[in-house]
Amino acid sequence: MWFANFFIAGSITMVLPFLSLYIETLGNFSDKYVQNWSGITFGVTFVAAFIFSPIWGKLGDRYGRKHILIISACGLGLSVFLMGFVTSVWQLFTLRLFMGVFTGFISISQALISTQTPKHMAGRVLGTLQTGTVTGTLMGPLLGGVMADALGYATSFKWLSVILFITAILVFIGIHEYTLPAESHEKTAYSSKEVLFHIVKNPMLFMVMLVSMFIQIAHFSIQPILSLYVAELHGPVNVALFSGIAFSAAGLGNLLMTKKWGDIGDKFGYIKVLIALLFMAALFYFPGAFVTNIWQLVILRFLLGAAIGGIIPVRIAYIRQEAPVAMQGEVLGYNTSIRFFGNIIGPVMGGALAGYFGFASVFFVTSILLLMCSIALLGARLRQSKSACDHSMVKH
Image (cartoon, rainbow, N blue to C red; front, side, top):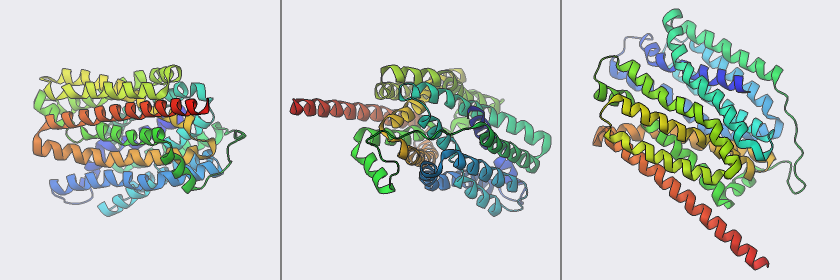
């Protein structure tokens, strides 16, 4: 599953360096047209994923997650393969939309591994799995750029599709999904209404899922303007290289710490660690507004990645703890939808703030959002502890 996630994350991010350049080859367009459609064709994938993630999660709960993973990898492979033959921007847009329908592979794989893992070590195992996704995400753009230069854009899409089809074969041959017996008090199937009710009536679970959205907003708010900010700090010389270093610094911090944070969550409690990580992320985001050279920004991005890297496995391990096995796929599907919603809001918010109030405002607002999440989660935990204490006293 680690290798499958590595291939999927790498393949999806490989197209990022040349998506806008590919659009340029489809007609005689103005720079503004290319920039607009690059954003639209990139973002539409998240819109489709936002809608379909809970549906795939529910189907995985009911019919087995391995089958859904194979369908997802084949759907991604087919859409990427056809992108190599497009002759218009509308065709590319339609295929990116179609691709979004099948973009839940990584969240379904997390649900699969989560349900096959004992609760007491879920954080460590999910942290290890997350390193596969992060490694693929780090290497994808670099390999995609090299491939596009060597083979051309259209041929690159066709070769990428081969990797995705190989992933489907890897899952088919290498993954055996055990059917875990439900605990005596648990049902074996839940309706969507019951799943939503379970989330809403559990305030801490609901809060953790909301935090998912704000983490993605924080992570993506800086994406559209990071290159521009790097150019302002460093000047125009080798701006693409230094922007790449700034982007990758967060991924490297994420890669080095994600497994460790999962392990710490197993030992000390997921909510405690989540509160601490949110506070740390807010702390590392804020000084970004005051940096005076590129290396200060790179160090802060590394520290931010180290904090944010732990949030994913810790959050999923907590959901594993709180949601019955028979509904975990759908709950994680809703969680993924909320995350994708954050992916949509983040770049729009970051671009608007930078445009109207300057680069520093993005760091200030994002830091405040993360700090508020940390405080809100701490408040929910204190209320939960008080409620449990009151209930215990009434019982006695």
